[in-house]
Length: 258
Image 1 (tube, rainbow, N blue to C red):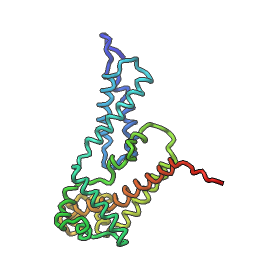
Image 2 (spheres, rainbow, N blue to C red):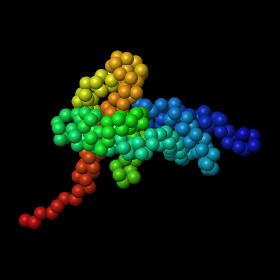
Image 3 (tube, rainbow, N blue to C red):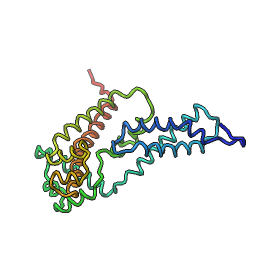
Image 4 (tube, one colour):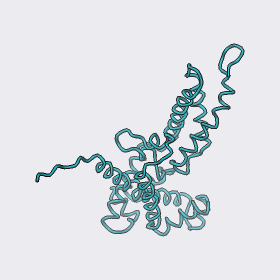
């Protein structure tokens, strides 16, 4: 593992620990949106491995592997955060849209129209539709959605390599999947069709526009709005459920007097 000059043979070590980087990357992929490219995770992880090799000074063994896992995982998470490129201002406006969707759905018992959403937000319809275009790339899940508000990162908790998952966490995740199916089924027909053409038939926005008889920009607006509806149904509800569960977990029993 050392050269004739007593220097660590980094190329050999990189080859030796490359499978470790891939294992961590695929472990993380199970907890990330489908839009994340595993090759990007691996590339960032290799940077973390090189950093670990450069910083570690003691003998190589299990202790180095433990250190390398932390550096590799940290580099992957840093890369994910850096690539979350949607401007904060636009994300903030889309959270307002999601809140308006949630309120109007409960008030009216149905999915709100674009005119109703624009009015609720105090915007003209054209201004609202412009926001939908600016928010192109709005995702169903962001890393900030995967925190519990106390600095406890979902990815950090689920990337530890623990073989046995927490049963409550597994139940919550199954609940989210079921809620997503219900939310997709509740989408307005045109948005539901657009999502099916995009995600199931793999059509691009231009092709979907031809099927629906609208422009590519309009398809983009419909996609952003559909994602906002799904987030309002899934992410918002899930965070409320998680907070309630955590409150129950931490609740102390009340002593009752006889």
